[in-house]
Length: 94
Image (cartoon, rainbow, N blue to C red; front, side, top):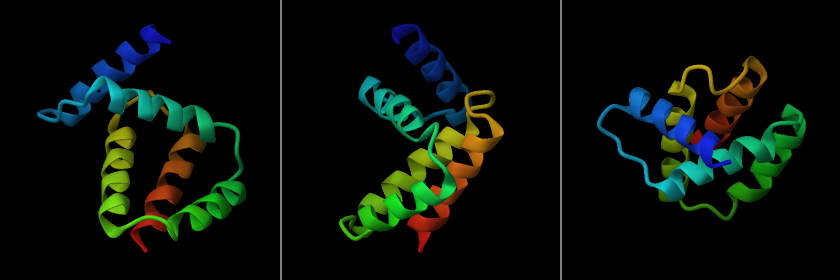
């Protein structure tokens, strides 16, 4: 897992430029990717809709920013995972 986190950290640093994520943020990214890896878009949408009622606008914006950084990491996500990230962003932006 530590090796994976260092790869993710390197890719994030390349993609994000001046943004310096903490180890905790990188762990959150890895956890998020793992949690939703095998879920269908319908399952994800239902879960997000349920969670969104508890998020403040600031929390949604923070999550959207993290998801956008995740999308920028070339080679980290496959096509299906990118669709799921796009779905997250779309739902959180509402």
